[in-house]
Image (cartoon, rainbow, N blue to C red; front, side, top):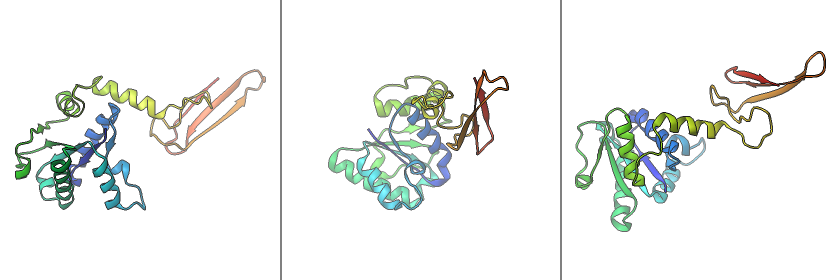
Length: 198
């Protein structure tokens, strides 16, 4: 399952929020900020995402209705959906802007404020069931999965800073003046966070 997220740059905060809670449910999300890196062909990466997606979430608003990128992604997806019956197109409406004529028969989700009700409706439309946990629990669980290093290379078990998310961590150890206790220190070179343990 791959969910492609189509939106206008002016609706980026809502798109990020939706991408985040989908990822917290372990749903594979194609979100441009996560999938397009410096040096990548934007068109090629978008094409890959569109061709591989099973669900096309379009964040629809006045901004989206005037966006040539959103319209191109939508037209490409609707043509594919008519031809192949996939992907499933799911409009998420932010304001009172009317959907394009070809989408008027598709049931949409009215997005209010990112509440549990909104989250439940979106996840249910993709998976057929509601979220496994409430949003805060799901985010905390995902956060711990992402920053934890299960290889046991150091006593902290972290691969990213728990404060800022940077991977620029520096570890070290020292022995106390009596030579009987070893202390381990871990420091983030980006934000200055640090911790120690025996």
